Length: 262
Image (cartoon, rainbow, N blue to C red; front, side):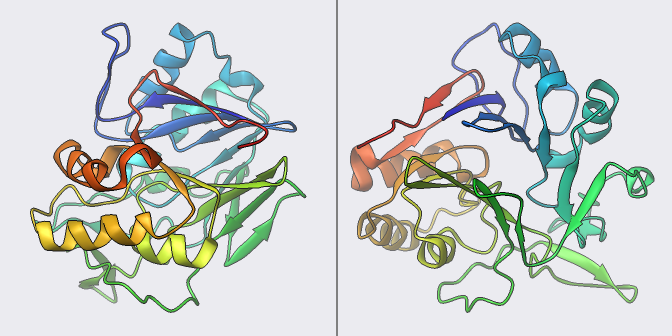
């Protein structure tokens, strides 16, 4: 399995532009998957530079209904004429940040017939399954300051629009998450993957006690982590000082190869 970072907040190669957002291209034994689209068409520009033909993607997945993950949806649908896009049935709810700024999706594409709306669990095939985990108990705090508009009022977002992709290949379970808004510790506890790739949504915290607890609980699991985007570089460096080589950061242009055996 190969995962290429098409767009992320940072880049280690000046050939690739970067933006606040996330887009991954995942090549498995059976599929070529676009996971999230960043906030613009930048992911497609970088894909060309990387020699990746997005017209060959057979599946697209949106992790949740925020602009920095779904802002490039229209660009992808215009570029690729065949791949269905799987997203939560709640993805187009109006989402806002802590300053009451709209951070949701472009609702004009909500009726596109290429969109496949998902509920709690969707088994795509024996390799791919989507999970929302909405019915799971949240053992660890996952508050964020983000909101959703319901009945004309802003209320705390419970992130029912967030879903995770579990890939089963070579007797390994690789979980792909966009921002892990439901809590990286909760998600790791629920899914128990061999490898987890995605943001941890920690970039706004300077609470070293909380980061220390998070790092040690991650260390207690057998999971290997590749993080990015909303984790925050400073927060990653703190976590890395504890979790060590089982935690790595991936930037625009990076590639992760999941080996057949550990």
